[in-house]
Structure formats: C-alpha cells, structure tokens
Image (cartoon, rainbow, N blue to C red; front, side, top):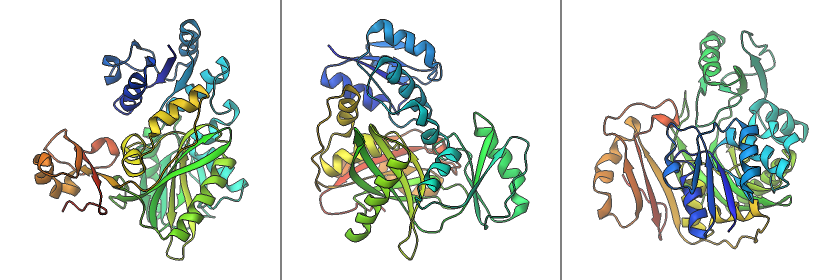
Length: 373
C-alpha cells in the first residue's frame, strides 16, 4: 500500500486526507495539534509543527513515504518541497520555494520575466518605506501569509504607519510589501502541472468585500469572461508559472483585469486554491477530480486531465456583509442546487480576513450561476 504524507491537519487538508483514503492509500498527517481535524481520519497523526521540516523528514524516512502533499497552505509548501527533494520524490525545486511562498520574492521573479504585475516595495520591521515610485492607492500585505490576513488598502501616506503595523503583526518574519492597487475584475486560475507542463483546469470569478480588506465572499465557475480573454488569461498563467519555476502539482493564480482588458498578476500559490475552489468547485464544474490529480502528481503517476463544461458551481460565504444568505442557509436542504452548507455561528460579524467568516454554502447548477438572493 502506498504511503502518503499530508503536511497540515486543519479542515483545509481534510478533503485531501479523505481522497487519499478513498483511493486506498495509507495517510500520515503532520500538523499542530490545535485545530487538527485530520487526526481523526488519517491512519497516523504526528503532532509536529508543519514548519519542523527536519523532524518531518526523519519520520517520513523511517515510515517509507511514497509521496508528500498539501493543499491550500503556502506555509506547508516549504516543507513539502524540502521533504520531497530529500527523499527523491516529486515536488518543486527547493531553490525556488521562496519565490512561491514570499510575495516580495515572487514580485521580483515575475517582474524579471516581464509578467505584468503592479509596482511594489518591501518594508522590513521598523523601516519606513520609500514610496516615491508608487502611486496611491496602495495595498499593504504581509509577505508570507494568505487568507487576506493583514491585507489593507490605503489611500494616503498618513495611513501607512498603522497599516504597516497591522500587516507586520500577521507576518511570521515581520516583513510587509506595499504595491500599487489595481482596479479591475478579480479572477483566479486553477491549474495542475507535471514535469513543467501546465494544464489550466478552470477560471473562477471572485466577489470580495472590497476596500479596505478584500476578503472573498463568493467564488463562481466557470468565469463569465469572453473566450478571447480566457485565452489571454491562460497564456499569462503559463508564463507566470514558468517564471516561478512551478513544475509539479496544483497552482492557484489570482489576477485582475482592468477596463481595457489588461491582465495583472496579483499573486500565485504553488498549491490548490482554498475556499473549496480546488477541493470542490473544479470537480463540480468540470468533472475533473483535482484532489486525485494532486496525489497522482506527487506519486509520479499523473494522467493528463480530461475536462469539459459539466455544470456551474460556486460558494457563498456567510458574514455580516452577506446576512441575506442566512434564511437560505437555514433551509438549505430544500434547495436542489446546494451541495453542502455549514453555519458555524449565527452571530454575524464584519470580516477583516477569511477566518472571520461564519459559514459557507456550496452549489451546483445546470443552467447557470446560481443567485441565491
């Protein structure tokens, strides 16, 4: 029986653990104990921090792991690449890990490859940035976090100090990036790569809270972009993945498209997109089992994806901003379109990051994007 190491044990990794078990693999899961829901489903759970890559490597060696994987976690990607390389397994090159997990290093690599992206500067702890080459408004974000943590739009120099402090407080390395705000439509691109060949699986339309925090409220597939724009998006995606040396596994690319059709890269993750985009929506809209594909890549047994338009899919998130969803979510079983729904709390609050959301509702529709109210 093949043995799969899953790095991370939160609810984000649970679909991956369940898929590996469904296929018939033995799952070894590594994570902090707090919030590690996967410990109840994995064959073996190790209460080891996902950043303790040497300790995880030692365990994987002794167990005889055949593949190491993660989804929806930039931090776990560092350990995945390290362990895979040390064990001679399929992964992405360790020497390029930084440019896929650090937003500043990523910007440098993209700019060097002439991939369209906004102007930017890095700010280390205690420094005040030189923004003379940037135009307001600006986006302030930690260089090493995801899930909208610490992200904020600012409109004037007076707001920089406070926003820097907030973003640095969310960063593991107390490092922040300031970049020019790009006005436009938000999309993401879900891809899988093997041996340096990239396969675009789906393009997702995004709805966020808008300024100042830009937390995702909805995702919908397939995108309603015109076909000719989708072709351009796929071209820029492949160019960006090559620039970041992403050769194997899932990737989640976030773009903005302005009113003139110009495509700008916001950021790219060398992992599956969170918010159920990769684990659920791609399969519902295209019929492709993305989770299985990620495992196949890690085992070196990848099969080229067969995708097509199967249906429309999406997810709505519950918060104070989307209070209108609550009656539908309470009665979700009476709606044929709703695949899964969970309300974590009915005490709704305004959200500043993804972790603040109070629930979610995943749908599949045969006739178009499902508007629930």
